Length: 480
Image 1 (cartoon, helix red, strand yellow):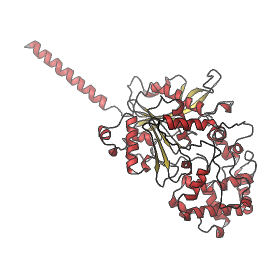
Image 2 (image 1 turned 180 degrees about the horizontal axis):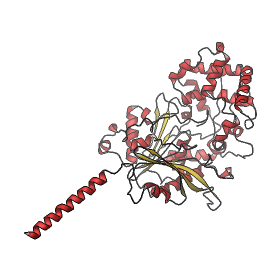
Image 3 (image 1 turned 90 degrees about the horizontal axis):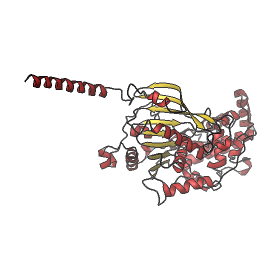
Image 4 (image 1 turned 30 degrees about the vertical axis):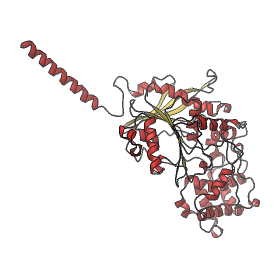
């Protein structure tokens, strides 16, 4: 009896201890996903080549700004390295991870992309190579191409997959959507799914009639007429408005060595006006456009052009941060050229200028016409678990990615009435639910209810007004 009582007491104490330990585990912060002995920061910094720039606090997450050592040339890794800036929005190692890039600089403040909210996961964000400070010194511009950038992502993924072992989804908007697609082209076994937003697909660089057709029908005739009239009037009044531009440039210390002259810069800004409106504005914003351009004041024409296109952009100071983009546009990505049937020829001196005009002449450039065709062909025949989202009124959607018979579990959806900020949330209800369900499934976190009925799919994380701020992927005027 005494042995039985002793055994019962021991069992009771053991059960109590286990229960307490379980309660303690359940009470641990949701955003760590690590033990006290292996803090997530220590895990990240244990990756060879990884160094900490700073850590910032955000409720429910930990946010790190990091540098990662990359080869300048992945084909010859012994020939120099550079520091590539990345960020990690850490929630829990047991959650899926979204790999994001905008194709330009990376934000050093916490932010959550739409797929990250949908899957309630971690987020790794990458600064595109050659955007400062992620630029080799000296810069060998021949090493700025889509394969090198995709391989940057591949190395980051391999380094962090050991820490974040669950499913990974790549994503990006605009040039970032292009980047996510190119990454999948060259490293198709890395990601479990791809969500590419508003990604242009300029397969044949010299054939741009799709854009002309787009601008002939987008929105309403009333809105198109307003925009066209203001654009034309800005060229008709070139002389007085260029005097205003010269004074503006002198006041702000702007120079025009790269583009060649203030006159070239002025026309480039004006010719971007209609494109820029549809890229970043909605049909409802047409009310802000002068209704009677011929009788508008010079200041009204100037203000409308400056608000949408920005007179500072084609100055050296505006172009310089985007040299890597224009280099890529002029060597691999391609760039559109459109017609202006509403403007008489005598008012247009240069037309849409090629990317070569926006890159310093000291940087050699040669276009490779086969690169985009290769990607387009690959996507048509090999896409797996890829989602492309476009905006109905976004000019960049005039030349989209399309899927062929070889594509599997892949989709191209268009959000009605939306611009370059189109997303899954803006799709029609059936497509929105399907897209959300597929993202959850690819990430390995689809609830049983969603697996049984995709129409009930919803983001797993609650909307956070600060973390989920839905900015349009805003880049320089006529650029993705």
